[in-house]
Image (tube, rainbow, N blue to C red; front, side, top):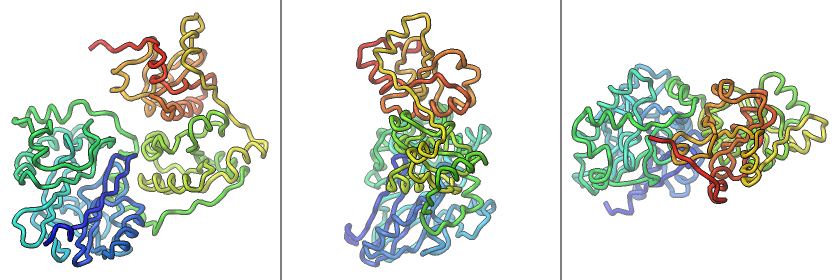
Length: 471
């Protein structure tokens, strides 16, 4: 088979740090999708444009970070969706269980199944071999092997962390590293994914490169591997606790990306009183200039797909606050990818309509770094709350600041943030996570809150003191 006959299209979700893939043969016109997300129109459009017919929808594992789109594809154009056989007993819907050694044909391309447990118990990888070749051209590794590392093994709970790490050791050293150096590696998880320990931002690699540079492949004893695999793991969004079960039961088939309906301000007011959440996805400065009291401020670029799932209780119905229809559609896509399906509509006319209806609006002051620096020298200095990640905090922070990751504010503020002192909240540079933190503090009843303009980056650039934690 000539090399151009193998078509591989990568779809990257920067917010999740994940990739999905459309693979096929341009000679036979048959194709498959690996680890698709739920808004499957993207794969269908590309396949149609290439003249490809989708034959299979594959998942490498039961995902914790996004709702699988394989069932959505299976309902529309493909055979029943396919996943590792060890997940068979747990699944509540029709599927095709896969075993190591199974193969699927796209005509002149063969897709093979390889059991690669570790990230999850049922994890499998897919080899892609051209007709007439003795060795695979590529392997789609999900989370079993990623650029510079492998996906974490602690997402199923403490009791599974070490046993899965030991399985991952054997997956890497006894299986994947036995492939030839030139085999292309296409992972699902990558840089930016909370399913992975900190690693490279690159999305693809080769077996040879990982053999020589991956920190986990340089470890030769199983115990040492386990220690390394379970070290330096960041916190992860709370919605992860729910999505493996959603994918096990079978996500609801949507049949397309939902189109949200406009809701007049008084209808929104009533819905909020009934427990619906207002999620404001506008940029930080627009949110600060005026927003619905106790709404969630989660700028679309935060990204919403991470922070919506981190701070909005899973399953809570939502109304979006967003004036731009393109951004509303993107927000809808992001939310359904992580299982937030109960989207009631959007505020018609935006905050201007809300204000014109005589409804209350909250505002937030944005303070610049020089003003904050001078204020911190006085007796009435505010409390500075740094909402960046643990790793970012360790690289340097403001003197006398306290640290609460944005995703932990709801559970931690009562014991760390006094109510009788002004609060200045900040993140890295763009004020996105600071806006998330601000909105959570407002929901808890804090009122004298400000946001530091462009955060620690602007503070450092102005030449003000930054301190580091003593190791």
